[in-house]
Image (cartoon, rainbow, N blue to C red):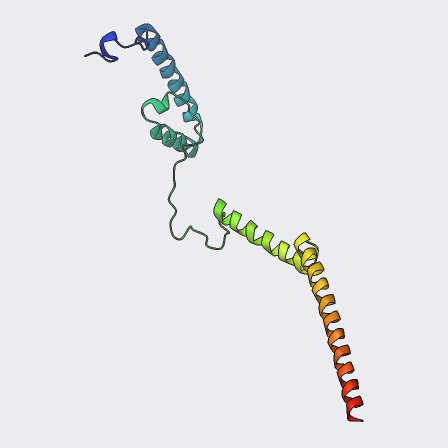
Length: 157
């Protein structure tokens, strides 16, 4: 059964390149390579060897098409001697967020202890009310105690 079921495939038809066009592109490529060879001969051996290495790396279609893909990065493995332990490594997103969270908590606690946060102000107001109530209760107990002592002193006389 053909692709697409009984009704057939609805996609585009195949497009073929013109053989003359392919031949013209290949001739232009050869001419560029020949002119590049002539230039390479005039340059020093070090430069030509680096260009040869680049040409060797590009095999297949890569030699024909110049592609700059930022997502395609070759991973170069490092030797143990090349790795520098003393350089600071980049933190991951989670680690950065965790550090920011801890710093924010420390800042809040510092402000809280200084009494500059809303919660600290509310706590201090509540403590002031409780302190006042306790002072009044202590004063009343003191007055009652003095009255009792006065009555005991009267009863003893």
